[in-house]
Image 1 (tube, helix red, strand yellow):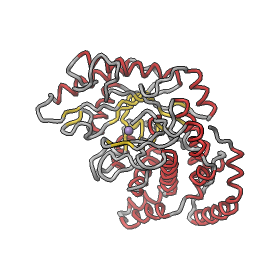
Image 2: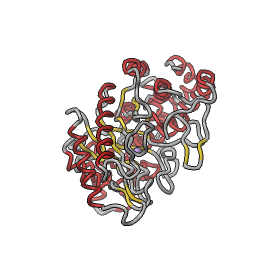
Image 3: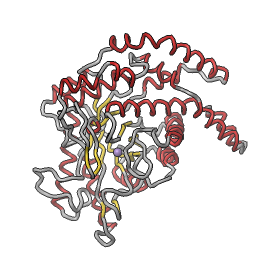
Image 4: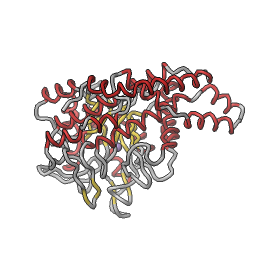
Length: 426
Ligand SMILES: [Mn+2]
């Protein structure tokens, strides 16, 4: 299924007057504060977030999985789903593949399908957190950190193979997330595990094409509950430094202990030029993988404030690879992703409203109250007309969720694919 711009434009006609009214009202108000909207709209229109191939079906927990009808049954259909998201939102211009769940069989066909939807292939993801049916050696006791040389070798080879697959699709980066860790004190030696991991990552890094980047993701716990080999940003940062200039830390919003100051982590990494990728989601307790902005929208805004500051002031940091890493247990995955994309754009727009010069002056004057007011004034602004204008400028829908429903996308997908398809993934 593919949506075309005419369908979307026709749907938007009735809402256009209201949008113009709201946009004019907001830009007049912002102009009074000396804030121009042109650049903000351009920045929003240029902001593209990758959708992972494993997030298009129903997610699950270890207790169960409730299938969603019309799920994509193969990689081509997953690309179609991201194409639908991109047509509506104009913000999901890339897909991030997971190997082996989505190993292409016909590369030319897969590339062509993505091109048809205007999609590129972003960071590719390896998987050493579960054993594959045809695997010779097990990852039960670790992969890149494994004491068993054969398991470790297999994990390194797998990552090198993932790089080859990504290269054939036009990806330029590999994301490594390790489940390696222990459940009980004494189970393994911390230093040996870390050294093995560093050595494995260096071998993978050496196997990347020269224009590729390596993203090292961290997570404090789960699936192991006593220790994780790469448990925090410091460990990831250290490993990235050990690998070289093209290795970076990847921040996943859900991969922190409760109340961690993620905006400060982002700030430090960008200062050091080592923030490579960013995974969006939201959480209440742990790695809950909930819809972006559904639980802590103010924290998301504060993180975006640091990201915007870094993007403007830290040329030493590369352009970031943005991705939504969420799981959709009870909502239609496409509706959930539309909500996430909207939340990301809103938080970004609000951060772009912050007058950084005024903020710097307030900080210099130790005017704590004013500094807080500057942030909160931006946060309290209803920026949706700006986000709409950015989407409109690229041919997206004014209201993607409404368009998704009134175009009957899910119904059409169920007609095409049937009720009982199950997408590979988490
Ligand atoms: Mn992630």
